[in-house]
Length: 251
Image 1 (cartoon, rainbow, N blue to C red):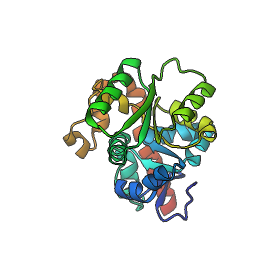
Image 2: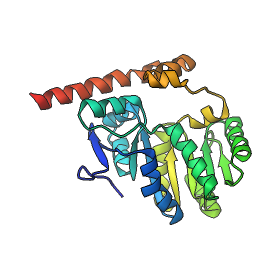
Image 3: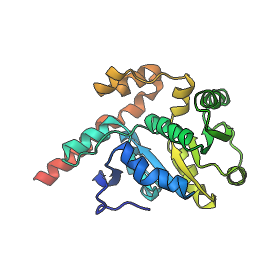
């Protein structure tokens, strides 16, 4: 289900149709019905970094626009929507979406598969989910390093029939992997989650609430991973692009 500018549930930001309603609405109206119907679904969690990358890579831009939903992950997206008078209801962070999907999978006793992160971290994720969500059925997991061929992974996942496949390979690899193989899968919700496994496993800490409220989550992440500084430049670049677009529209 590709989204278009006439869809009342999306807003167009920088040429991408972002889901504009709440996490609850997304779950109740779209995600849960598709999971229960065993339909395929592809969700992209997009922040300014992903948008700026997509703008420079047409193949990746096409992948993003083919997704069933693009959700606003990143306060820059939320601020841009307000600046353009197209406010989204709330930020839907990839990590928050991950936790919510785990909760729903536990409630409805669904099957899940974990793909991504280092071996030790994905094992920690599996162990923690086992301890915290007794009704979730973990069908399998695979580290994001030294992945088998696509054909092997498709065969394995199809045989296990998970309802949700969490893919934490980091962008753009996770979105490319999902898009490249989606037609070969029989069912399942596929969602790219970036570093969510590392946070959930305890390998990385998520920013405290005060940082989130002050829109400084990016700074907390940068302190933990200084090597990300080049990627962080995309945030002011994105805002400058939004401001420029609005200025041209006004004039």
